[in-house]
Image 1: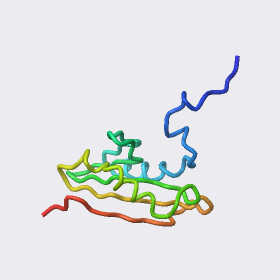
Image 2: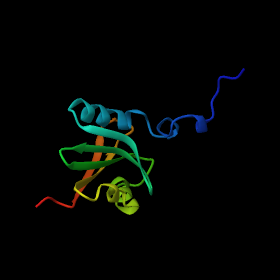
Image 3: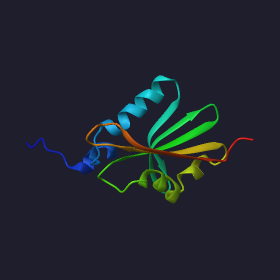
Length: 118
């Protein structure tokens, strides 16, 4: 009996080529401070790496690893796929985080606020 598994049998996050540490650290931080965190949040246009909800505000986070995509792609992807539409009734902040594969640190951070509160 073989113990190997097809990537189709693995959760989506386990089958992706990015290192597992890329989403684990932000997830742990937000969960520890009492926010509602949704990893791999499903929308009609795909998945958001992390959605964080707290006191009527939403932060949508896309993580990319340097060398696996071009710079600036994380925030661009959130905009292009229209992920914020799922949470359009309140204040939404899009956050693109790019991580260095070598240093395992943030190498680029961009954000954009949508539907600002008045």
